Image (cartoon, rainbow, N blue to C red; front, side, top):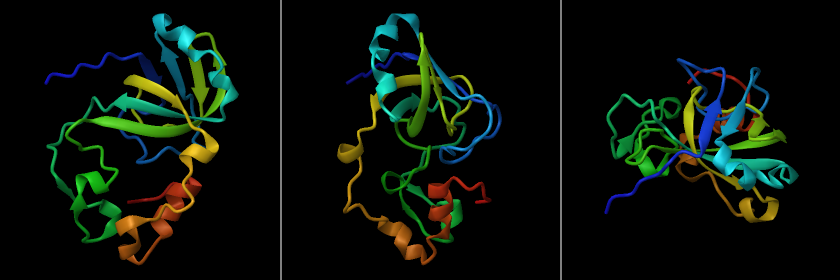
Length: 162
């Protein structure tokens, strides 16, 4: 089976060489999505949502994919790639949740994003409060680290070292 995706737009960020590992809502700089003109009609009423999912092609990977990863911040813990948020995946598709600041024409201005400037956008979906927030969600293997401070820094958008 051969699957082909076509970008619907381009993500613009201030990042060219290094990007954060997760979106940082309070990050400074220009963050916007340029949706190609033929998809502009699809943006109707998108501005009625506070948050959106962005699915994108991680096009600048230059490392080999592995089915096991060791998150840098987690010490000596090794997990399967599908139990991680590593960008090194068999299909390099990224997912970010960002706040919509405004939609004008074919441009969506957002809060901070964790991707490089020029990243191809594959899709946009609305984040719906009660559908996308699961009250019984847990922290999985992250709890085994015994230190949830690193996760808390991601949640709060606090810049930190890995």
